[in-house]
Each structure stands twice: as C-alpha cells, then as structure tokens.
Length: 327
Ligand code: TXA
Ligand code: MG
Image (cartoon, rainbow, N blue to C red; front, side):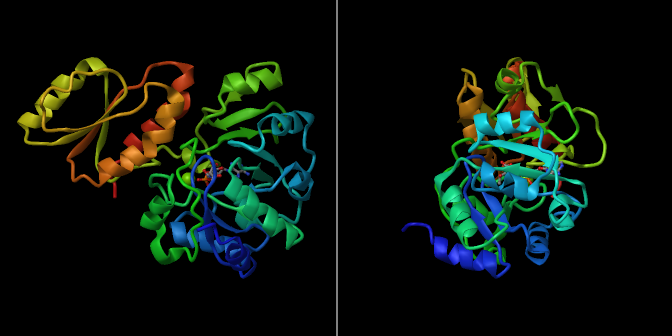
C-alpha cells in the first residue's frame, strides 16, 4: 500500500503527529509553525521541552522563510549535500516558535533525502504557507532511534496516530549537524557526512565541537541511543577472555562484532556487522534493538577502529554504553 499522504497532511494541519521515514532515522513530525502541535512531540517522546527540534523542508527555496543572515558557506553546503543527511543551524526568523528552537535564536534545518519524506513535505508545502515539519527521531527520549516503521510502533505505539512506512533507513544514524550561525562552521554532531566531505566544500577542516555546555544537541548529552541491557565496549583482543569470564559467572552476553573473531561454541548471541562504517551505521540500531529483546545480561560490543572514518558510529556507541541499563 502506498503511504497515505492525504491523511498525513490532514493530521499535520489538525495539529497532530505523523511519523515518517527519512534516510537517517524515522522522525516524529508535527507542523513546525504550530506550537501546540510541536508540544505534542515532547509529550509523546517524554523529552525535555528546552531541546530544539530540526525543521524539515522540501527544498532550499523554503530556507529564507525560516532562517535569516544565511552565510554563503551554508548555501554551498546545502547545494552539495541536500537532500541529504546534513542539518544546518542558522539564525532564525523572528516568527519561528520557541517551541521549535528551545528558545534559542537559531533554527536547525534539513532537506531529507528520502522519497517518502520529500513527497510528504511537498504535499504539506503545497497546502500551507510556512511549510516545515519539526521532527526529532521517533523514539522515546534517550532510547535507540528507529530505523524501521516497526521500531516506531514499538517505541511510540498509539502515541502517534499515523506512521508512514518507507522501509529501512539507508543511512541508519542521525544527520550530521553543522552550526553555521556563529561565523566559522562547527560540527555539533558527527554523522554520515564526515569532516572530510565538509572539508571538500569549506576548503579547510571544519571545527568540531567537543566542549560540554548547555545541551544544545540532544545527542550531546552523554547518555543517549541506549538499550535497556547493560553494554560494554571490549577490544578484539580481550573479547574471548571477557566472554569466558562472563560465562563463568553464569551470564549470557550478546556480542556485536565487526572483525573476524573466533566464535567458539560459546552460548552467546553473536551478531557480525559490516566491517565498514557505512554498513555498520546502517545495521547498528536494529542490532542493538534485537539484542535488547533477547533477555541477555550484557551486550559486549567489539571496540571500533580508532579511525576518523568510524567517528560517527563510535560516537553513537559511546553514548549507548553511557545510557545502557538505566531504564
Ligand atoms: O537525522 C536526523 O537528524 C533525524 C531525522 C528525523 O531528521 N532527527 C534527529 O532529531 O536526530 P533529534 O531531535 O533526535 O536530534 C537533532 C538535534 C536535536 O536534539 C537538537 O538539539 C539539535 O538537533 N538542534 C536542533 N535545533 C538546534 C539549534 N537551533 N541549535 C543547536 N542544536 C539544534
Ligand atoms: Mg534523537
């Protein structure tokens, strides 16, 4: 069955929520120009209300409605990477609701590279003036982002009246966020679009935000993307010893690996993910979700290579470990 776009647009106009696929993860969307609708996102997710949301648009032409003083470098990034997994933080237009921006003077904008998201955005835009869909990932706060429609249902159930199904997300981790609102572009959240890709457009290495401070990006809270089962990162060399020790304690571990490891005949649940960052990102959240359902005492994740190409998935894994087993 094709996605029910007409009903989705009707719900958005009525101030209701619609979950939809993007190429990164599924989003939980509301009319970004309607603060009461946006408030429902926070209620459904159980998310603190001061966290700003990304506004999804159907094309660059809509950017000036939402943002002002857009620097040339931001236009260049849009030209190169939109539609795609890149969010730009820009100075907001005065009218943009505080509910969307968390009261900040900036707004996060993105044109997603998924045909269902784009069709929804186009239809919404053709039926309303200031068309933008505010959408965080469609999971409960702090949990694993959904990469299929079934994951959204599992996370939010009847808290969302409609879930558009666009299959499994191609990228699998959240968009790269680049702040273009304070002069020099700064990467706030790593993603599929890596610093090297940005460098090709910027002509120099982008700055990368590491400083802790106010939670301007929800992914920048230490604990995030987390399963309920405790998780540990274990180096390839130590993994077998670690599992033996766990087994002696009577614990059954799930193992998420990526390199050729001797799997022995241990009573552990093994999952091998692709040994490249793109394939790994694509499968990571679904693997964590499966492991979380398997009734394990622990998820042991084989530590990733120390290579910039792995930075985005390494970031998600670190946060998952920090938040795991807490709920
Ligand atoms: O790939 C994605 O970005 C997905 C899909 C649905 O587009 N969305 C997503 O949304 O990951 P969310 O809310 O889970 O994470 C996006 C983060 C927000 O947590 C927020 O802190 C940050 O983007 N953000 C939004 N507006 C911002 C702003 N004005 N300044 C700084 N950070 C902002
Ligand atoms: Mg999220």
